[in-house]
Image (cartoon, rainbow, N blue to C red; front, side, top):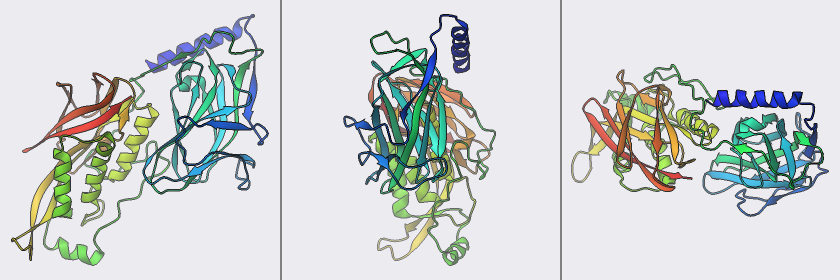
Length: 425
């Protein structure tokens, strides 16, 4: 559906170009060579530090000083956002592209959007490779905008920035390719913003869920494995007393069980549960390459959610045997190994955009050694739907705010009913 809509937009633009009365457009720079000062709107700004508008950290490949610099760090993972205002704004932009150069000191998820007189466009996301200049040309259609739009501000953001990670974002050579001559906000904007596009073109993978191999999809590189809890000597010793691939402490086991059984939880805490549980199990591995790297899967799922503006959400699933060390007697002077099973689901985001979203079940996002995949059903407000591998279902929430998603999993003799929570925006 999205492709047909975009083709329609392109066709309409071609007709307009052929119209003898069509008004010519020209390229306009918003910021270049530091000569065009701007400001960041303080209301709603979540960047840790205010922008430096004529920064000089030296010349980079494809980006020469001065440029805009946005830097900082926070004590928790989160999104950094802000609205940029330039001297030449507002402008009546009619098609074409937004051009800008961006560069970050860390691998980062960068987002940019347009604020009009009455609404904001969708966010367009780009995964930035650390210390590399990215020259972006983003068609207005990529923002979900058809026709013309009166641009008042340009929004920029870094998303899911890790805690305590000092990150710097550089921005330069910002401009539009098609601004109408003599245009102003006195006219009527013809922009249409496509909201809640739940049929973003998601492509399912052909990977086997039980394979430990995964290729990078949207991320610039493969994520490293979780750190290993045991030394090589400890692992060799433990392998002799258990056939399990993972040996965790009893405390870690209880944390996993409690998180899966929780009936109430904040959306931010819910988003981290799958990742934290997989960390507890997989870092306690006794053998390398036992399963697919959960860190890679989690951040890829997060990137897909962001690329769809949080309207297409991959469901993360784990179906694994593991062993935990339990006290053999009351004083816990000795321990015994107990075989158990991890069956759990998760979401890579704490929020979704709009009352209707698509949930996808891709084998790429399932961590298992089983050849038979677990059965999955998902319930919202008492309405349950089954979802199978390489399928998508539509979920509809009754209202905005914190909402509960109940996921029911069955694998062999194991059954789990887990509560996940998201903020509906």
